[in-house]
Length: 175
Image: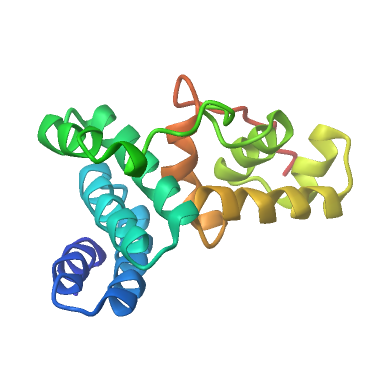
């Protein structure tokens, strides 16, 4: 089965599962849909994941998933999904709190995420930013956690949502 239909099937299957299992199934759906680049299906799965996480008391991750879903729905022009996310109860609002920046990453994390999303190695990133490889690895660990991704392969689809123009810096290739 191809990745795209599998992600949709998992999202639909999650409706039949108990709350804890639903979160696990939807996490798998989100991971698959990030790999396909289908932003609309990713937004739908993130919205379902956020609701499922909220139902089991995982409010922090739920808020993050709902916020990502809201941004993707807006970017895709998915007005019905966007409206439904905005009409959630006030205490369940996917909009980040006022003290949080719109972009969850620090400036240093944005630089590392952007370079990593363009396929540069940790060594290349460290050399470009004049930091150690260990610092790059630490930034990537925090980036993955903040963006709810499991690795570098998922960064392009997710990180593009946090850049203003959808582009990132390119290092000159030395090989």
